[in-house]
Length: 101
Image (cartoon, rainbow, N blue to C red):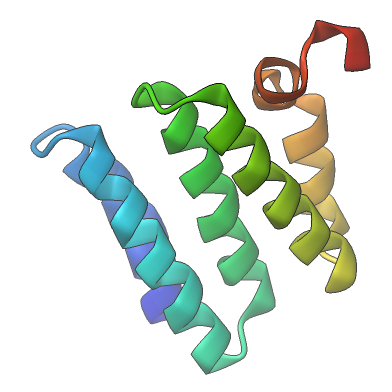
């Protein structure tokens, strides 16, 4: 439950705090969800962390590395619904380039 609260509330924090601070919250949410055994919410926090990296102006190379790690984690744990969303959204196009579409 705590990982889910962090995932959702972190998006609200972005309206008050700099977006870069959200990245740390999602990393904490990922860890918390893993400790609770909630792989789906751990994956959601990873996906939101990747998305925030792109939108807060981090380098696309850093976002690609994070996106690849998140995709590997989701494949490894069979969280295919979130993996599908990640790979079909604009995030994948931004991080991996338009030629991969």
